[in-house]
Length: 486
Image (cartoon, rainbow, N blue to C red; front, top):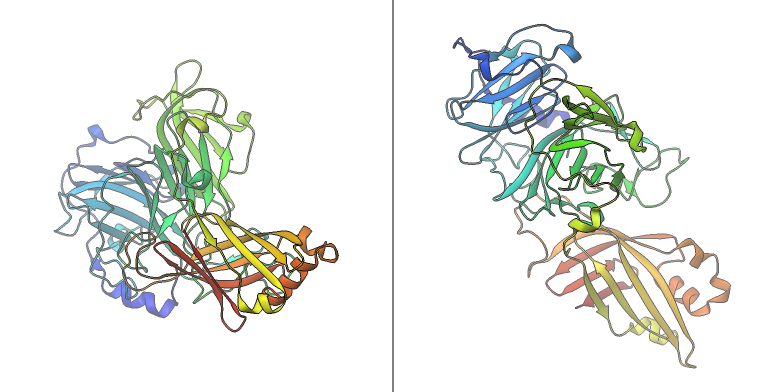
């Protein structure tokens, strides 16, 4: 999520400035020569390697990307963090550290070549990243930080192929819960709660054992080596309606295009034909949030240790190439079975069915009675199927298939996760399939219904009001106010 540049200055002013390097002696015996893969204890950006040891953080120039040479050095940390670093992650200019109380600490300016410029903060949440702080979710399985920035990424390319500006940057922490199916989305501009999530692969059914993120790129893998990737954050999802224009209408060729919805979906990546571990990494390259390099630790056919690597856009198994590092394997070798084994690691998701058992007075006055079913509605996983059954007084019947799109919106106050007894507002659209619009002459009831409620348009923006056992679909001033119940 982004805010105007003037606001970020206030946030930075309340950061904790710490001299960059400690003068403590550094024991390099447990520190690697290079960091190729991200883990809880080691990470990298294009300027620095970072490593957590004995509650401290150490950095070393990332020679392969920065061209700078140097040795491992210990960072000077805020006193409440020093000696208590449990886990770290890095992306772009950030190093994020988690302490023993699960508190999130963020270091900024990590692309500077002078560590004395680094700043730390434990603030998180509204207003404007000035909140009292945030902790990681309980019982998380894996996590990573992501930062999409105008300085490094320049823009992102939406699903219509249009470049869209990033604002001041989008900061996200993604965490997989121990149920292996849910991904929490934490954003320091949003409330310090766990109400935002990313719908996992296969509508949240896919069970993940590994996750890595970078520049709003997400990579996940299951215990059998099946891999999915996605470009997704709060802004790309269509949730930042305050600052951006979004549209489900086709934005290709539009002079001043809105951001295309829906957001990019998960891509099922080709499997690796070889030995791999559960250590995975994705890192950003280039501009536009188009290219992302995936790495998976493993061994080649000769038993050499290293990692497999390819770009997310290359879709052949042969595109995976192996890089020998000679470093000991850190991850656990997994049962990388040949072929697609996603079906072996699927769980139940949160899809629910809702019904509307009677039409409206407006429709009955027009000689139409109708009922509706909302199938597979999931507040975290859009879209859902909406099926309208239309009948007239003569007994004629038509079935109208519609698609209900939805996306969460911006909140500045805490909310419990999911649908509760308190109303949860989302934005959305009702889509009329093109083949329905092309055959209205043959479906008079459908034609009349679409004229009454949806103006015979392909997409109609609506608002959703979600409550336990109920989904309300409404559009002010249109007579569209439908209540679906379980």
